[in-house]
Length: 343
Image 1: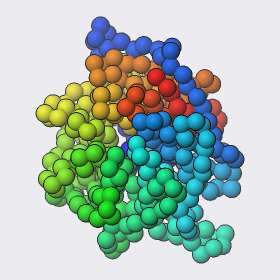
Image 2 (image 1 turned 180 degrees about the horizontal axis):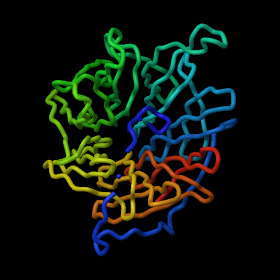
Image 3 (image 1 turned 30 degrees about the horizontal axis):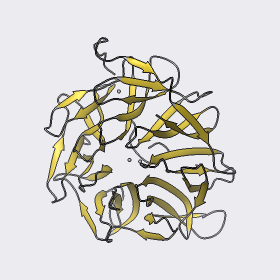
Image 4 (image 1 turned 90 degrees about the vertical axis):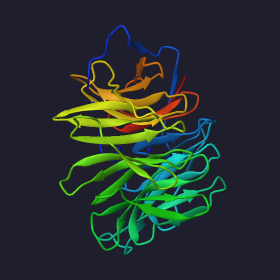
């Protein structure tokens, strides 16, 4: 789905009827924490149906590497060829991983990396394919679907700070796009029908959400009365979640396939991030209250909430939820550690 330490806009509060929306601590769930060898900070970005996790980690020398954590807990670290920094941000049920990387620079301490960033796909056998949309040279991948299609955005080679959305199908075909009137486009997620969601900025610097269907039709998503709308996740049913802004207040929203939009802030939240949704309609993210650090949450399709934190956490962020309701993310206790929460 960026950004966590991925470049993604940050994201919410409304009081719900207490009788309808009850926050329940998750007593039965099991949380396992982990770190790749030599990690100084670990970030879990995505989890597939089997519980395999893709993410990235930093080490003390300043490098960033990607990793795959298998269902048995085995961790494999990797980097595409010629990578200086690597992000892994998506993994599908076949174990194909998608992400992006900064290209190495001049080979000395003053220029360790270049101004080029590329997307990549890594197959389960460890083979890499790197790519950039035509006419672009700074690519950020948002995610991968079950078919191996990838979506994201990339900076125009001739126009600094102008980003275009793209869809790369599993056969390697890349299509770029922008909503009408966009001066820059950022993509956040796609589903298995190649429907893409993200944001675009107009020439008055207003942010609008959008949904792009597989055939290329683009429609705006703007929460009524909001200063800006950011759809961050979409499932295969076409249900979308994200955040919107009203003045200085942030709120989470749910958009049903028929276009109905409702606010879904966890009770007591003053700021919300939404980064995961599964096909059952469960939504995962994190939120801040009036004081203290962030907490993870899962919202059921019926509107109930479960909140959680790994033991010893002072700040929890959740970035993925799979078909079983298992979640992955990271928590902070001075340094960042990855975790998986099994339902």
